[in-house]
Image 1 (cartoon, rainbow, N blue to C red):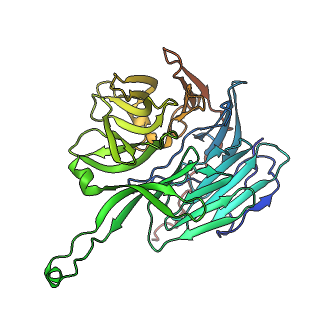
Image 2 (image 1 turned 60 degrees about the vertical axis):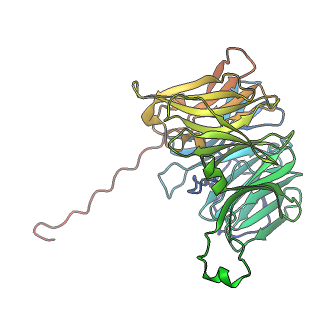
Length: 430
């Protein structure tokens, strides 16, 4: 069932307002765009239900000028719209996204508009009410997927950390004087964080030190565990930028995945010197491995990684251009960690102009709970035929890696508003 529009109220941080389930169309929400900081990235990826039988994903319906969230049912092999929304104040593409609650009983619809963040916990059972949370002053921060542990959601704002209890509706926040540049993610029940830090170097307690030029701040990335009760940082690894620079490594992109078994992190990192980006494997002792993807084309782009369930390889989304044909291949790279040759599994191929610069950020891959299927959607592409948008399922359990495509539902086309004609002026007058 689609949902009726819910107006964005005056923005304030508050406990949830429990409302009755709307009966028809869309929810007035938008997602945060990609931030300028390299640490952050819009994680707009499909979301698997805990039993692996259903997938939520979002797309832009160009004809209807709406953002849509669809639900694909593997058993029925059918797709239906669960949310749709059009922003009357903007003709630009608006993002609307959703993820499953950990128990599979709710669809969490999340968005940010301005500095206000809104989350709606929509129960799958039709008779149940919706929990509606609105947070103010979150600023620019990462949104999806939001970590959920013990029926609690954990969010990072620009200068605050927030915990929402889905059972009680309680909102707990911890505020900071300065931006934390913090990314939160779930590692199999452990709440991890990655943040950028800038600290002043220690000052020597001597008179000679007063005459020395002041040293620049120490810039570093910090990885650690966030306390789920008081939201305090407990660092386990610090990566100084100077040390990374010496190894030819630039910024971390925020495209990452954690292996729940040993909490190792696979993160995409920029390479210095005009080289292709790489993947770093981070452990408690530092950078364990630096993996080149082995792509010949320097213009190839790397998306988000996913650990295989046995942690023997990584799946990574990639865009590989063919300059001669002016075509780009959207594919998944299988990267073994034992040194064996990688494999490229093609998803689709399109004209270069159809891919946006941030496509891999808005078309992230998601591995199914059983580790057999990779879900990905090209739904954020604009100005392409509606029938070519939808959900792709790559079967990595089969030797030939078959790809299935399920078109996104097409909504009724809206009539374009005619351009306003300039007001006529009397002849001979300015």
